[in-house]
Length: 66
Image (cartoon, rainbow, N blue to C red):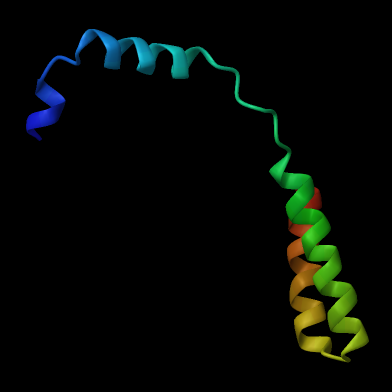
């Protein structure tokens, strides 16, 4: 890669440094995924899709262990 070997201009380097210093928001993806899986389980139960419900119950069990 040719770009990887070149020095960045001063303004580009300044921008990269400012981005790297920013604090990223603390997002809890694990709880969002768990909530979504619980929603899918609920919908599968309403639709009487017991195979899908059991698959997602298994996934939920794995999420709760992690």
